[in-house]
Image 1 (tube, rainbow, N blue to C red):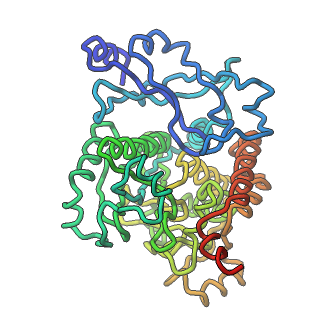
Image 2 (cartoon, one colour; image 1 turned 60 degrees about the vertical axis):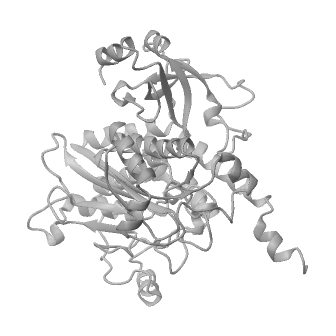
Length: 461
């Protein structure tokens, strides 16, 4: 939105407060609300924000030994500078707007561990090669008839009340029954600038999937963050709750965050993944890109699955991929190629969960894909049939055609920490910072005593 329009809306009393902020390393939208008059006055200088945004974990426990944010530096300010292209009214709040910010140090340097900055640098790298990355996310998530108080009274489960009790996957009548919530979310998001192509019931009580319309990669990540935040805010207003956990219950399916990406020419006139005469219409550029995504998928796994809980989704017999397989419109593979048209041909990465930070998901796909293009990597043989078939998988692993993916946060973190490609494309500072936060996450889990421990051991040991 241009500044003249923003000023007019403020002058007309249609905007009183603006939510300014950015994604932390977990993808949580953090910042503050600023009165409209002070927003205009501080556009150039920006807004001060404590750097503890990058100094704590998702539970807001401060981490030791971080280079960027720490006690020794007194948790100094960073500066949030609004990107007015992201300015938008918030339809579910009266006279409120939001604006995503880029982050700078007080010394005038960009915060290089900011997920939005990481993605911006990779988009620019793609553009330097003549490409414009286009992306989209589709998210599975769950709704509960719980508020913030009842969630804590019930200790966050397992006996929460879902929005509706049945499975009812793809059942139209059940979507209609929930339209007072889902329809409201879809319409509010559209008016917020986050267009929803469609949505449906998924395979679980109170479970839905929503598909966000594709856009340039940075906008796609922005909109995914705004979507996840907005869903939670709308639910709070209605006395409900939503979760994007990868696996909320060991009795039910996990929630994926399938991620779509293609490369276009800089004028957005041609999808460079398409080749009329090539097998599967996959251009050589697409084959190199996909080869890179698959080759570096194990090293970037921690960005697709950033939490302890993320790995509860990667279990045999589920819909989550366990190896670096690819196929043509094959939902059992890690990478599904959708090639039903020149404009729509793309790579669908089925590894990420809904819990991931999509600035980092798209960054990982871009980094590994561009690596494949720059090194002209050869694409391994595609897999036909069931990518979960143990006979097929064992043979492909033995022949070196596919690679296994990490099955826990410890192994995924180790591979990311050792990845030279991650350091080259994402920056050494970010790799060090993110690795430290994942090791902390493991440490916090290892000292936790869970209901599983009590149920299993309390009586008989």
